[in-house]
Structures are given as structure tokens and as C-alpha cells.
Length: 189
Image (cartoon, rainbow, N blue to C red; front, top):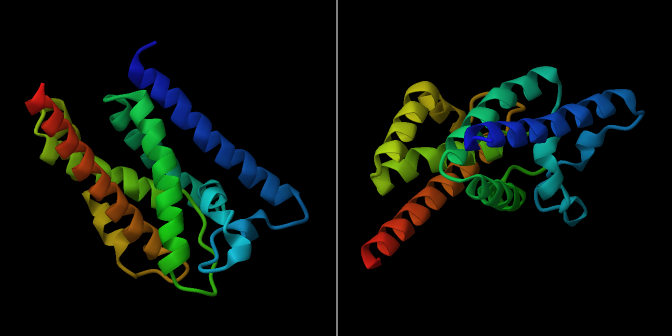
């Protein structure tokens, strides 16, 4: 199976897990979203892993659905394995940073922190790596999703700009590091 079809299948499966949890959340007599990230609460440490799969409502999930799949496919063009490694890394690091630095007395949920990490990675990786396909992917990401930059600013009450900002930083640093590492290894080869 072509790589982009495979990653489309996997990323859709990840988002279908989010759909299932949203449906369960609406059917069960408990609110699963209480298990999101509550900054600096030891009791809510598992939220670092759980939070990306929790969404407030259908509109919240739909706003995350397509960007996640598109960014996953764009990274999957390089490597399916790279996408999964980055996905796990972004879930953990972005979640941990939100747990450490976000506003207290709030619950942070949703895939948007990971989406911003994927976005930051795609933007920086291509321009630093300077390979044709990677630059094209960075330009596509910038042209179609450049407006995401406004999501890192505190603007809408109830929306975790911290997860957007911290995700974008983690993604950009990861893109920079991996691109520089690949350049170094290609020079040594």
C-alpha cells in the first residue's frame, strides 16, 4: 500500500478513537473530560496521555479532524515510522509542558496541541532540511495553514492557547533538530 494511504488509514483510526470517546462521553453518566490535563495536579498526570483524545463537543472534534489527518499524511510522506514517533513524542512533551506551565484551575483537552506540534514541525523541518519535497511540504503547510499562528495567542476564553503555543514550540524545535541531524549525517556519508 502506498505510504500516504497507509498513514491516512492510521491517522483516521486515531481520530476515530476520539470519535468513540466523544460518543461514550455523551452516553455515559460521567464526564470523561474531567481526565484531561489539570496543570500541576498530580492526580491528573494521566491526562498528559489521555487529553488529546478528549473533546468538548462535535464542533471541537471536527475542527481537529482534518488538520490532524492532513499533517499526518504530510509527515507520513517522509516515513510512517517518523509520524508515529513524532505523534507519541508530541503527545507526551506537549502534554507535560501544558501540565507544567498552563493556567491552573482549568482542564485542557483536545488534539490541538499535537496538531500545532505537527504544524510547527512541518514548517521548520522543510526550510532547515532544504530538500525539494520537504520545502514544498513546508510551503503547502504555510499557505494553507499559516493562519494557525493566531491560535498561539490568548484570544478566545475557554480555548487553551497554551497547548497551541507549547505544541508549536515543541514541533518547531523537533523539526529543527531532526533536519539538522539529517544534514549532519548526509555530510558524513
